[in-house]
Length: 245
Image (cartoon, rainbow, N blue to C red; front, side):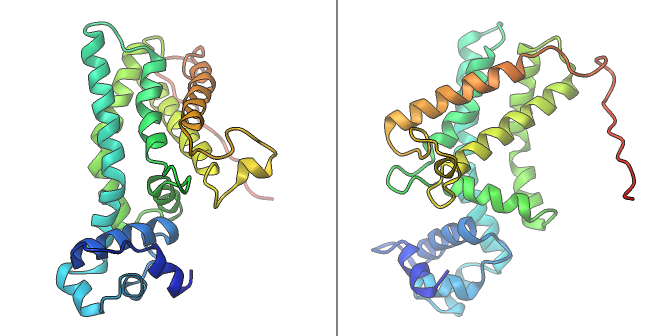
């Protein structure tokens, strides 16, 4: 990404220097990943010098950690709020699986910008998957583990015929497929458009958002509610990988 593009991507106006640095870092981390984002990139994007970045943030690690939290936390808190509202609504009864899917997917759909069709949340997650076992990634995962556990707990209540281990697998399959399909709708990715998809290849209008949620629920419900795939509630599937020839 060229310096001029970075500068154009940075928020302009009357924001404080600290806020400008933070907002530009969010955009850069989402576009390039934590490792590829440099302090020099941030300076080019905001028009500040390295001393200013170091003044407001002690290190690149601290800055990118806060930027990732700023990207991810609103979506995760929205998920938690929706699911807790559903739990309260249904009281002692299990929350329907369709509602749990909606609580997971709707905040990710809502995060997609209506003008650009892109989401900092989805882009950042894609980079995090590629940058495994970093200190920043581990910090972020630990920060949101309680939300994941809440979803697994509710799915386990709604799917009592499954072991908790299998519920956890299905939750991750659900989460991963939602992230993947919504990321493919990003105009910079254009995967669905390449495959010849018309409606639903990008998510910008209210109709696009409704269609995306409807499609995700329709697709996911079958997998989540399928009969147990594992031999028994106490057994794991052990995958034996043959040695390379």
